[in-house]
Amino acid sequence: MEQLIKFVVLGHHLRRGMATSLATSLGAHLLIDERDSGANWNHRRALEWAAGQESRVVVLEDDAQPVAGFAELVAEWLARFPDSLCSFYLGTGRPPQYQMQIAERLILADKKRADYITLPRLIHGVCYSVPLQHLSRVLERWDSSKSADYAVGDAHGGPVVYPCYSLVDHADGEPVEKPHDGMPRTERRKAWRLAR
Image (cartoon, rainbow, N blue to C red; front, side, top):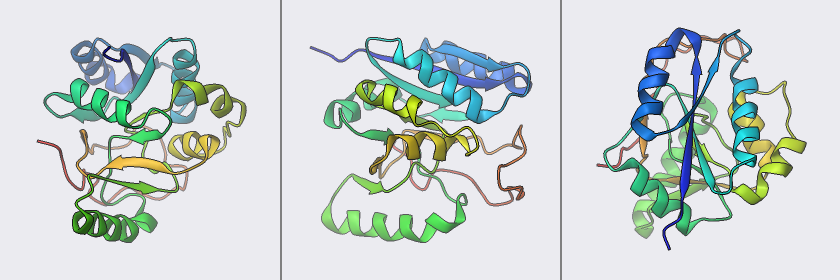
């Protein structure tokens, strides 16, 4: 029996058109931040919505760019890793402190002919899925002072599965909210590798 998966798109009011277009293409639930409440707030809202669903939910930010066949590819990964936090974007540039570790793990995966790596933390909020059975724990342990990606991953705990070839790219435009660390985003923020 095929696993039913739902999608939720998080949008900022300045990117309403982009968010609506992405949500429409996936038949996704759409959550727009109308009052600049922030990514942390909107990601928590998405996970609260996900906790009320009967199927696994994939969260996408409005600047995610899914590859062709995205929904089918996501279904395959989630069937393989039903109990894991999965991230479908592995990006360059940010956060800088993880880039060397990513490069090393991708090289090792290539040597082993593995198609995924794990990292101890969720480092991107662009596109991910928390197992349905873990959502209540994530919401209980939520830290609203952290950036959204760290808030999700740290509340979940445990390693995060990243396909070597990301299922979404990142539009890499100007951020709509001031970064948590106050540092400008000048690095190129695109997928290391993209599924074709």
